[in-house]
Image 1: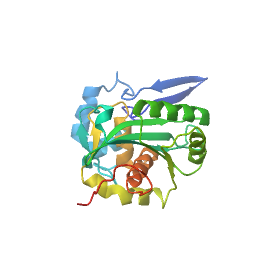
Image 2: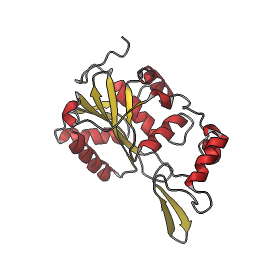
Image 3: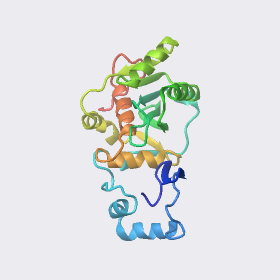
Length: 245
């Protein structure tokens, strides 16, 4: 278990008891507090600290995607300032402790820059997945909702289309997860993708990106690569960016 929780975590203790750790909650603050962990990180270096104390042996900066490629922004702009908002859904087939997560990443386009506005990451039954999709649509009013054209994503898209959601499009995955992300890394290297300086979901997102493709989970990475691919897909009526000028 990581010394500092990077995601909401429920741990079974036996005898029907559970312990829920919030993001950032220390494993045993009475034994090793935050000041001590900060000192250890400096002494060991980030790579050794991540492996020994966070149980996440990923090299500094990431394996495939370097976290220092991301720029930052202070706070989301008013919705009308974004030329377009796009949501990218990577859905899981079955919820459960060791199964994948349902992830929706929301992106705002302004000029050549892209703001990652929110990452929703939960394990949903299909009914709850529908509720989450509606909630996030109401919150951000996206011009485009991209849903992975596989497994539960196909069912989700079909239901939403029957409800008259014209902004819904599906993308069938091409190649494996590493190939899909590798194809999109030039966009990230340009430095036009910005993350907020702080957000409840930010540390989990960065940890997964840094560990990819050797991390336990990759749903947030899949959602991001799908969104970046959607920018290049001609049938989608959203403002296009020439990344290679």
